[in-house]
Length: 213
Image (cartoon, rainbow, N blue to C red; front, side, top):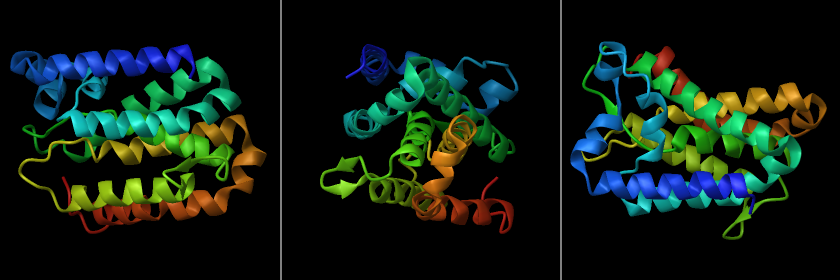
């Protein structure tokens, strides 16, 4: 695995562990609409992606990153990977900030936005070269986003994962891929279209039915 990816995973694991054992640190750096919009604590747009709700949440995000990072590194290089990862992270959280702007108490954590961008970018480049536990990468991505959309539209009191960030993150990863390799990305639009179905449904629920925000 690439050293850049290893560093990101290591920092995420360490910071997540610290957050799980230090409530004040967790509260200081999690995504929170009121803190960002009113107190201008913009560091939370990045720091929240290095916090996780529990070890299973951390494991799932890092496992997904592990399976999909290789293709992104291959096609875009280390700099491209960092652009997709952090660009998706920030855009995903900005999207969350926008749709929850009337709910200053809304909080979330997790690398979901960043990982979503990596998943979409990798599928745009090589939909048939990735498998996760015998599932094709594009099918895993579809299930990944489908679960996130379901949890976002049917929130649980105990769930403060950053499901909303998936949409913004996926959008960044897709657009970056099309800009950098337009012909290759367009040739894989069928796979991207299938994987986008849960996110299209989410967009419909947010912007047409106004279920969130």
